[in-house]
Each structure stands twice: as structure tokens, then as C-alpha cells.
Amino acid sequence: MIEQNDNLLNISLLCQTAEVSRSGYYQWQNNVDTRNEKEELDKKDFELILEAYKFRGYDKGSRGIHMRLLNQGIRMNRKKIHRLMNKYKLMCPIRKANPYRRMAKAMKTNNISENLVNREFQEHGPGMILLTDITYLFYNHGNKAYLSVIKDACTKQVMAYVVSESLAVDFVLETVNMLIQNHGISLSEETILHSDQGCHYTSISFRQLLKDKKLRQSMSRRGNCWDNAPQESFFGHMKDEIHLERCSSILDLRLVIDDYMDYYNNDRYQWGLAKLSPNQYSTYLKNGEYPIKI
Image 1 (cartoon, rainbow, N blue to C red):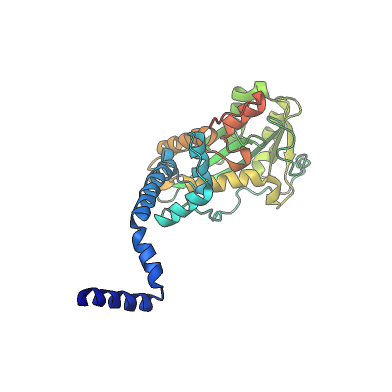
Image 2 (cartoon, rainbow, N blue to C red; image 1 turned 90 degrees about the vertical axis):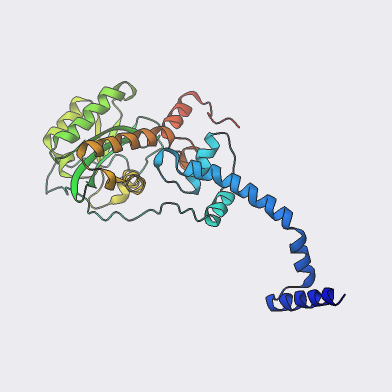
């Protein structure tokens, strides 16, 4: 009896120190089994989250994880995903400002095309507005390469890309030729290829190539990054997600870029594309059948 009273006194002192009621303490103690069950469920759900996070080696935030699980037939609330990521210290990638200056600014020239897009990137449907740009790729302790990309503004699909060790205009021309070779049948004489006013895009050879391929040329206004914002955003996210420091040669770099482009088109789901990947979204627009079945 004395021992029991001592225990009660100790509990009272502990509750007073912790500023909780004795009834609250007993309720907490009686719910141990329930808490253990919830902990086990959290662990199982977090295993699914971690698998989605690491899919194909590219880190993802809560949105990317939610869409990856959704495409596997698993519906998990984003708030829950976010809670479990915080609980188990799983950090999502944070968009970093591009530390590199915009490359190859146009010198004074009269070869400037009108801005036909006017930031209407998705309103005209697939294959109508194509965006192109160039970015730096740094690898192997300071080696530099360049990436030219053409992307569909509506479906967000990467239509063509070329990695080059040189900034010569040829690799931009090669990107256009690759576009025509792989997707020419889906383009029309109304298709617009939109770029900034960089010297590659104002060059005589580039302008003549577009004319020969019956593509309309459009350019952003000088110094206005918003006129080609989706392409800028694509490069920013790509650099957050790939690991160029692992590349020891230009061959390694090309393999990393090839894998990322395949991942991006087929497995990188996007909130603004009805939670589908670019290729899925393109198919969805064509046949009208939503591919996710739950």
C-alpha cells in the first residue's frame, strides 16, 4: 500500500513537472498499443514514399512522390506524404537559382523575329508552340559542355536534344534536324519555334533552316526571361535532379542526359499535366482516355 502511494506521488510530481493532468497521462499510457500500430503503418507508408522518391535515381518532392504513387495505383494524400517526409527526415530537392549567366547574348543585328507566342504556351495545343534554348553543363571538376533542347510547350515533351562540347551553331541546327526526323509528321506549317535572341537563333544558317523546314520563327523580347519561362524552368529542374559531378567524361555526360530525357518524358509526372508524364499527357490529349486507373 505504501509502495502504491509512493508510485501515485511520483506520478503526480512527474505530471506536475510536465504540466499535464494525471488523467491525460493515464490516457496516453493506455494508448500505447494504438500508437505502436500507427507507427507501424507510418513505417510501411514511408517505405512506399522512399521507393517513389528514389525511383530511377532522381529525387522528388511531395508532388512528384504523390504522382508516382498515383501512377502505381496507390492514392496517398500529399499532406500525409509531407508529414512522413518530415517525420523521417527525408529532404526534397529545393529549386536553386541558376548560378550561370545566360549564354551567347545576341549582338546587334536586324535578324530579330517577332514574338508570335506572347506567353501563350499551352493554348494552341500539341505540336504548335515549340520552345528551344541552350544551357551550360559543368562536369568532371570544371569541364564544360552545352545542351540544346526543343520542347513542346503544350505537352512539355522533349522533342529533340543535342549535347555538344562546342558552342558552334552546328549543334543547334542538328537539334532542329533531329526534331524533323523524329516528329516532322506531327508538325504543320503553322508550328512556331520560339527562342531567345541568342546569336545561334539569329544566325543566317538557323533562320534559313527553319525556312526550309517550313517552321515559323518567334523570339522573346530582349532581356525578358518570362517570354521563354517554361524552357528556363525545365533547365533549372533538370540541374537540380541530375548528378553531373558523377560524370568523368563527355560519354558519361551524354549517358546521364539520355537517361534523364527518357525519365522526364516517360516517368516524371507533372501537376500541370493532370498528374501525368509528358508522353502520357500527349497520348491523353490525342485519344481522350485518362490512363490512371484506381
